[in-house]
Image 1: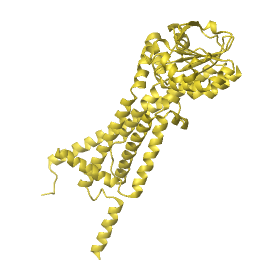
Image 2: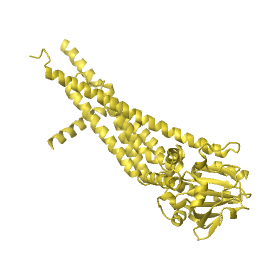
Image 3: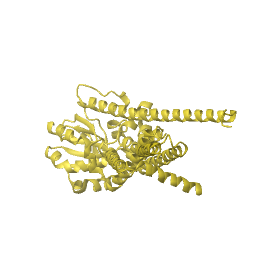
Image 4: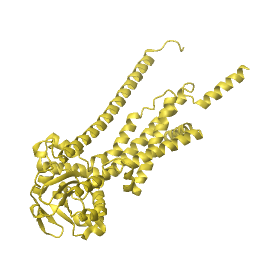
Length: 196
Length: 218
């Protein structure tokens, strides 16, 4: 329990670092908006079969909610990764983020599109077997979108947790190496004062 | 005291280096997998679009194997039967004399839902051109039962549900095999009064302008 509280403190500290200036907070809001817009265009793909602004006419509260949640989580992961890269660190979650994105758009792209039937026809299914298999697979993607979106969110939260702890641990272990611009200024100002 | 590294610390160092390189390899592998899946998806979508458009041009034929080829433009509309939601048996041959849009859907497919709503909005224009619409549920809903065709049609067609120019039906196995051998969802055929296919495409919600253009040419 104590360890968990400790890790939650680390998480809070990382968020404090990542979103410490108004400029960074503004950047985060911008990124969250951008990703939410992208998700709001991609999630209704299964309705319209195209990525276009007209997809917004298929948005319902469920999709709006998921677009906002996933967009916010994705932007937070990206902010942590950017902070880590600026500190010459690797957040180590790029692949996980890619996987989360893929998991969120898979149901939209695999239900009602020709991908599954074409693949099965290539493999050599024929007649009734093809109908039932292609129908079964596409039905699964059509009806289990919440499962995929929840998995995507879980992966994003895991990425946030993991990269935050990495960033925080690196900062505790190598405070000289993991410094941020304002801290560098403070350090250099302090050292000049000492010299004087 | 802190001078020489002990064998234990060297071993730990080597272990952490190995762990790091293993993790790096894993992330590279995952990254490559993501890129491959995205490329395959885009490739397959392009493949389908080219095969549908080749079915859509009278000079070319469908590129997929014979057993899975969709009927193409210029061919006579294949035979088959369906049962309307009023229980009437209809054959494709009996539709001759009036241009008809034969549209195959599944009641659990989201693009079919969107297409039905788009059709309801454009039915007046389509009917004005003298074209009747037959929206037909694929055989056994492709093996995964969604809502019944009646509730699907009532909910999505709205006030147009009782329009005599729009028939809702359920396909026989033969009709599904003849018109949708691969099991695509949401594919449609425009058949002229002589029983020839004049236009093929999918997802009316996305392709309504093209469909209306094809109807105006009929």
